[in-house]
Length: 427
Image (tube, rainbow, N blue to C red; front, side):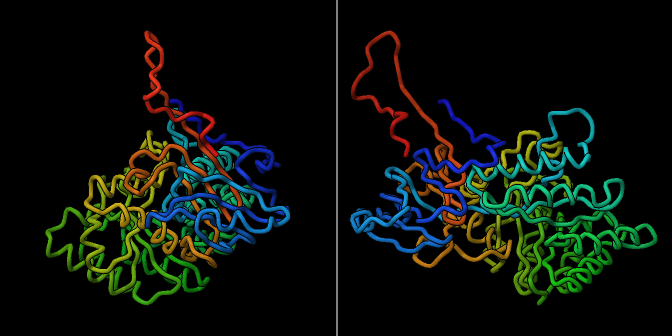
C-alpha cells in the first residue's frame, strides 16, 4: 500500500490554495467549508470555519446549500471522520531525527533548528497542531539549542504551535549554580515552560524546589521528567506542586507501574489531589528517563489524575524507530493498556491540549478550528488504520497525507466486486 508522506520542507509560500485541500494563505478572505464529514456520534455534517474558529455545524448539505459566501472554499470530507486535532505534549526537538548519524546528536544550532523543524512537520502531518518540545540547556550546549528551537518555532508560525521546555541537568549544590542561572536565562529568553530531570540530580527534592521557584518567578508551567519509581520522592513532589498555577506536568512515570498496587494507588491519589498531570509515553521512552514501559494509565485515571499521552523520542538514540504519531499512541493505549478508544483518543487530544494549557476543542460552533480528518467511519477503525489524514490548524488546511490501497491479481482481469480505494476518492 503506497503511503505518501507530507514533505518535511514545504515551500515558504505553500498554502495549497490551488489544490483540492482548500487551504488558504494567512491573509486570504473567506473561510473553509468542510462537507460531508462524519462525527464520532455517527452524524454526517457540514462544518464552516472562519477566523480560526468553528462558525457553524449543520446537517450534511445544509451549509453548502445556502448562499455562497465570497472566498469560502469547500473541502469534501465524504468518507472521513472529523476529530479534534491531537497535540504532542512530550517531544524532544533538539535530538529528534538524529539516530541515523553515528555518535552523539549534533548540537550545532543549524542542525538543531533543522531537526526541530522537520520533526514538528512530521508530527503535524500525523495531526498534532501543537507540540511541546523539551530542550536541554546548560553544560556544553548552553542556550544554543534553545535558541535554535525558538527559531524553528518562528519558522513554523501559521503551520503549528511549537512551545519549549527548558531542561537543565543539575540545579543543586555548587555544580548546580550554573544550571540554575541558565534556567532563569532560558525563561527570559522565551522558554514557555521550565522543567528538567530531578531523578538525575544528587538532590531530586532540591531540584524540584529550584524549578518551582523559577516557575513562580516567571509565572510559567512546570514539566518534569521522572520515572516515579520512588513513592516517597513522588509524595514530596506532589506536596510541593499542589496548587501551583499554571500547573505541573510529570512524565513518563513508567516506574509507577512497578510499585505495589496499594503504594501506586496512594501515589495516584496524591497526584490527583495536587492537580498534577501525568504524560505517559506508550510508544517508548526518551532520553530523560531510564525506565521503559508505560505509566499505569487506568489506575491514574481512576484516581482522577489527568493522563495525556506523548510520543517521546522521535528517531533518536532512545527510540531509533519512534514515529511521533499521536494516533499510534492512542492505539497502544487502547490495544495494550485497557483504555476504550474514546478515552485513548482523549489522552492525545483533549487531555494533551489541557496539559499544554490550550483551549478545549469540540466539533461545535464557537470552538477553535483545530481539527483532524482521518479516513474511516468510526474511531476504533481510525485508530487501527488511519493512513489518510487532513490536518486543520487555525481554520486552514496545513497538512495532508493520502494513502491508496489496491487489490489486483495480474494473472486474471480485475474482478469488479473487489474493493478498491482509488486515487480519485481523496478530497
